[in-house]
Image 1 (cartoon, rainbow over the protein chains, first blue to last red):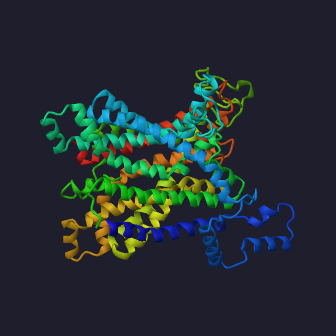
Image 2 (tube, rainbow over the protein chains, first blue to last red):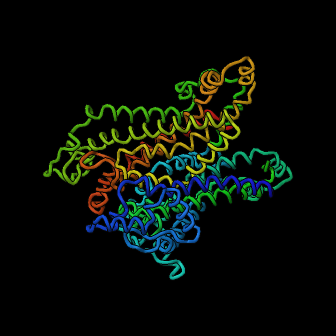
Length: 314
Length: 291
C-alpha cells in the first residue's frame, strides 16, 4: 500500500507541473496586453513599461514562471487586474457559497439516486426500472441552466415557494440558507442524480448476481436485509468513486448554475472575470479547480483501494 | 467507458468488421429510437431552408408574442414577431455542426494519442498519459469559456479539445487488451509491420467502443455549445441559436414562458437523442448486460 501511495504521488508531480504551466500560459495565450487593461486611457509608453516591470512581464518567460510559481506556493496569487484585490482573498471570500451549493446539490443527488437506483436494480425490467433508466438519460440531457430557469419561473416567480437569488451563509441562518440554496442545488444536482443513479443501478445488478448474495438468501436472510445490508454496501463502492470526482469538480460544475442564480460563488467569479478580461483571477480559479480535481482523484484512488481489498496496488 | 475493454474481451474471436449499426438497431429498441431521432435531427438541419414555414430572421412587429398554436405560427412568435418554429429548425444548423467538429477533434486527436500510447507502451505511454491527466484536471468548461471569450466564437474547437482525454483513455484501454490477444501476437510474429497491425487489426476492432463514445460526446458538445451561447459567446443575433434564444426568452418568462421553454426543449431533445443512442449502443454491445 505504501508503495502504491508513493507511486501515485510521484505520478502526480509531472501532472501538477503540466497543469501549472498550462495555467501560467493562460495569461500569455490570450490577446491583449494586461498593461493596457490596467491603464485604460493613460497609455504612455513609460506607463506601459512601468506596469510591465511591476508585473514582471519584461523578464524571460521561464523566469516569469518560476517567480509566479514561487508566489503561488507562498499564497500570493497575484492581484486582480480590475479591482486590485488580492486574487487569493477574492476566491476564499466566495468559496463558502460554492461549497455550500455543491454539497447540498450532492446530498440531494444521493438522496434521490441511491434509493431509486437500488429499486431499479432489484425490480429489473419493471416500470420503476424503465422510468429510472429513462430519467437517467434525460437527466444528463437537459442543460442545467435551463432547469434553473424553469425552477425559478415555476417555484420562485409563480408559486413564490422559494426566494430567487441571494445567498445566506449556513452558519448565519441555517433555515434561510437552505431555502436560498434549494433551487440552485436542484438545478446543479440533476445531472449528478442521473449519473449516480445509473452507477448505483448497474453496480447493484452486478452485486445481486454474486454467490454471496445467494448464500445470504439461502441461510434465510430476508430479501430486504440482503439488499440493504449485504448488497448495497458493496454496490456503493463504484458510486464512491464517481461521487469523489464530483466533489473535485464542484467549482467547474457550479459555473453556469451560479451565473443563472446570481449566486456569489467562485464559478460566477470566473465567468465575470473572463468577461472583464481579468485574467489573474481566471488563472487563480482555474488553478484551484484543477488542483481540487487532482486531489479528489488521488483520494478516490486511495479510498477505492481501501474499500475494495481485491484491487491490487501493483 | 469502463465497459469498453469487456466489449472486446468477452467477444472472443475478433470480428474483422464492426457490428453493423442497422443490425443492432433491429435487435435493440433503444438503438433504433436513438438512431431514428439522430437521423431526423440531421435531416432537419439539412432541410431547414426547405421545411421552415417562415424566414427565421424576418421580423413582424405586429405579430410579436403570439402563443404556440397560433394560425400560421405553430410554435408562436418571439418578441420581434419572428416565427419560433422556423428559428428552432434553423437553430439545428448551428448546433449539429458544432457537435460534428467537436467529435472530429476529440476523436482524431484523442484516438491518435490513445493508439500511440497503448501500442508503444513504456515511457511514451507514461508521458502521454500524464499529458492526458493534466488535460483532464483542467476545468474544461471554464477553459472553453475563457478561450471563446478571448479568441472569438470561431474557436468552437475548444469544445473538441475537452473531449480528447475520454477518447485517448478509451482507445488506449482497448488497444492494451487487443495487443495481448493471440491474433495480434500471431500477426506480429508473421512479420506484419506496426502500421499494418494498427490499421488492419486494431482500428477495426476499436470501432464499436469508439462509436459509443462518439454518440455520447456529440451530446456533450451540444450541451457545451448551448452553455457558451447562453452566456452570449455563441452565434450572435439575429442568427437563430437555441442557447441564445433561451437567454433572450428568459427576460419574458413571466408573461411568455414559451420563448425560453421551446428552445430549451429543443436542446434537451437533441442531447437526449445522442445520449440515448450512445447508451443503448453500449448496452447492446456489452455482453455482460445482454443476459
